[in-house]
Amino acid sequence: MAEVERRRVDLAAPTGAELENLPTLFGKLGDDVMRLVDTKLSLVKVELKEDASFYARNGAFTAVGAMVALIGFALVNVAVAFFISNFFANDAGAAQRFTPTSYGLGFLITGVLYVVIGGVIVLVMKNKLAAYNPVPTTTLEEIRKDKQWLKKEM
Image (cartoon, rainbow, N blue to C red; front, side, top):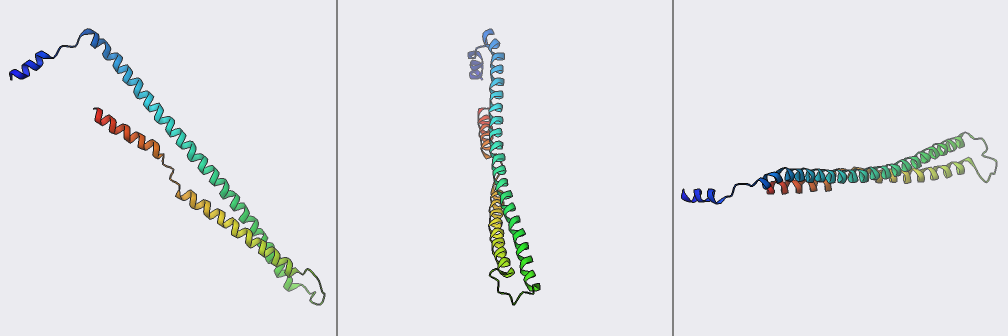
């Protein structure tokens, strides 16, 4: 018990200068907290801009792939039309260098090539977009570190 009383006696009462510094310390603490929040918000902004540019770039490639596939689909339809028209043509006796069949097969091969290329582009970009994680991991990790630091300090 005497030891406790000695400790109380040994502790000096705060002086007037220390009490005046207390509001200053709280002001500095508030400024530091605001600076920390501003830093975290700017980090979130940077990560969101990166995510937006990723989606814009891959979305553009997906649109290009879809357009190429659409052109291929149109060419396949033209090829089918030429090929079918060959069955109704009544020029079997005429020796022609370019028959509707050759036109139809040309359009068909070209159209299938475009459909395959466009489909591959669309699938690759779709898988890339599906695999991308839009969560701002750097910001979340920094917030977790700050939370742990604050717990240790308090």
